Image 1 (cartoon, rainbow, N blue to C red):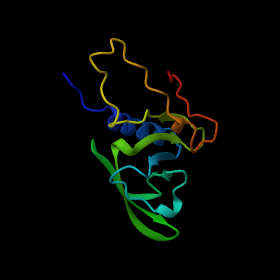
Image 2 (tube, rainbow, N blue to C red):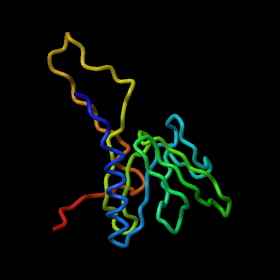
Image 3 (cartoon, rainbow, N blue to C red):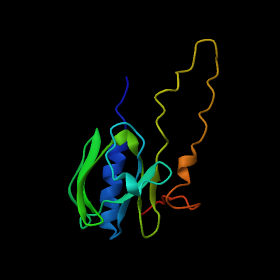
Image 4 (cartoon, rainbow, N blue to C red):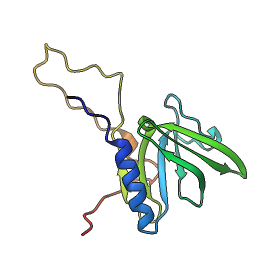
Length: 142
């Protein structure tokens, strides 16, 4: 039985966790993905980092399919839209804690019947992004 993506659930949970810890949630978006609507002048290396704290955005909606909100860029209001598949990560600005997701590659064919052992998917370079060489980390909180 196929299950839906866990990404939107994890994004919502981490968003709440980051806010409850008095930190600022930043979201990393693949700005080149289909359907993404972000201010292109702020895109770097095909990615954009957005502050999605309640004081920075209005009408934030995180659904299973997409995230959208209204933000101000250079004082100009803009509607932002990104499918959940374009969300590459969410983390706290203050300490980098959060999660970077594996990229979905819908063009990769499923393992063929001729190859008994499927090849491992290569790791994405997207993990070293907005945080420089420092990857966000998660830790057990008791």
